[in-house]
Length: 114
Length: 111
Image (cartoon, rainbow over the protein chains, first blue to last red):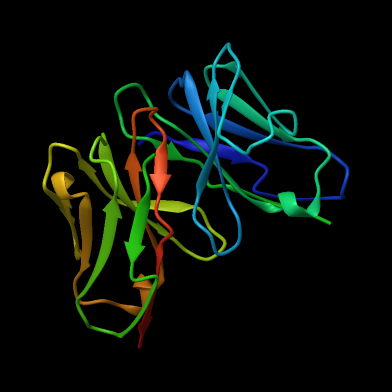
């Protein structure tokens, strides 16, 4: 089946720094990828829709200037958490789907901001 | 706006029991419904995918049903095992091609 990878799987950063998370579709092209986050003991919530070659679409309440999304190619979307704070500590998961097929989720990235 | 709820929030059963997890969604305009399993600190494992035109799907000891008109799905787990202990998430695929997730049911199967 299709594979979506994420890197890194786990990252710890200091408050005020920025961290980049990569989401790759390994064996298919994806014009659209989705970024979700999951706070402890909560379910997954859609943050934004990443569109190849155009601006991302953010869900209500998600700061677009804080969570920068770049979808520069058909196999790579990046999420950069800028000026991270402890409240940004969360589990971030991306998903993508080959056209007309089911979506595949990446393994997730656990971000801890100290 | 689509909302997904799951009942119960948590469930503890002895090994060998059959059990049912419930999922409800408010808008029947969905493309499909998917059940996932999530182990603590881990990502998602897809269990069953039901297309909007389908009524049920089966995989091993798992059976999922979908009643789109009433906005309900159930996940039936037969002969539960300790290894089934995890959080089970129900999610619906909506028009924007993104998923809306339920809050999950935390299952504990006691040996």
